[in-house]
Amino acid sequence: MQFDFTLRRDGVPDAIQGHGEVVNHLGQADAASAGCRIIGFDGDGAERLQEWLVTHVICSATVRISEKDAMAIVSGHSLV
Image (cartoon, rainbow, N blue to C red):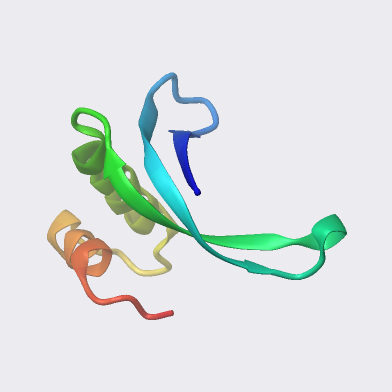
């Protein structure tokens, strides 16, 4: 099943829109979770999401890191 989505950040008027697909379901109907994958973003959504994530990494770091280091974390392999 495919769907459209919108990502928003608290206190920021910007939004990112795109398209996703449900890839699996877990649990019962009353407490189900769905695994999804992003199919694509509208416009420059992928670049803006990367900017959001780099900013989040920099602001969340417990030690000072550069924008270059944050970009490497965002664009690197998944740790999950």
